[in-house]
Length: 262
Image (tube, rainbow, N blue to C red):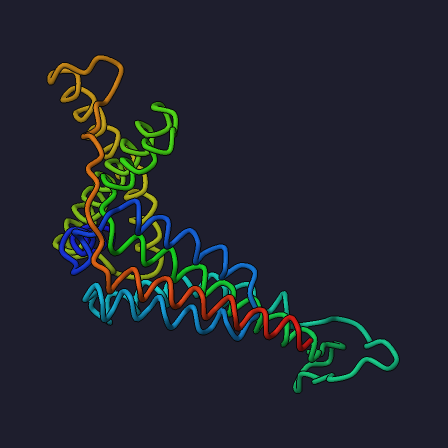
C-alpha cells in the first residue's frame, strides 16, 4: 500500500499546489477537527474526503481501503468503551444488557455516546492526515519541515526510515512469492513454522539490503549530511483559497452557534 500512496502523492491533481499551503491547511483543519462539535467533525470528514476524491482525483477505492484499514484499530477499542461489567448503579439510564451471557455485562447510553464522539473525532483527524499524505510527496514534506527549522538529524532519520519501508516491503513481497511458488500453505502447523522462518529471513534480508543502501550513500560521497533539495514556493489558484477560507469561516460560525446554544 505504501507504493500506491507514493504514486498517488506524485500523480494527483493537487500536486502542483504549494506544499506549505497544503500543510498549513491540513494543520488548521486538524486543530478544528480536535476541538469542534461532533456534528462538525463529521462535516469536516466529508469535506476533506471531497478534497481528496474530487479535487485531487484520488481513486475512491484506494482512499476507502486505507480509511477502512485505519478504522480497524478503532473497532478493536470499541468493546472497552461500550461494555461494562458488574451491576449497574442505581438510576443509571440507558442500560442495554447483552443477551446470552451469564455474566453481569451491559452497555450504557453514555458508552455509546463516547464511542460515537470518538469515531467522529478520529475520522475527522484521519481525513486531514490523508489529505496531506495523498496530495504531498514525502520529499516536499521534508522541505516544509526544513523550512520550519526542524533539526537536520531528524529529517535525515525520517528520510532513511521512509526508504527503509520500501526495502522492507520488497523483501517481504519476495519471501511471500517464494513461499507460494514452493507450495506453501500445507496446513496450519506448517504455516506457523513457515511464518516463523520467514520472519527471521525477512530480518536478515532487510538488513542486507540496508547495508547495501548505506554503502551506496558512502559511494556517492556521503559526508554525514544528506542534502535536501531547496524549497520552491508555488502559487495557489484563487478558487482553492476561496474554498478553503470560506469552509473554515463556516465551520467557525457553526461552532460558535453550537457553543451559544448549549
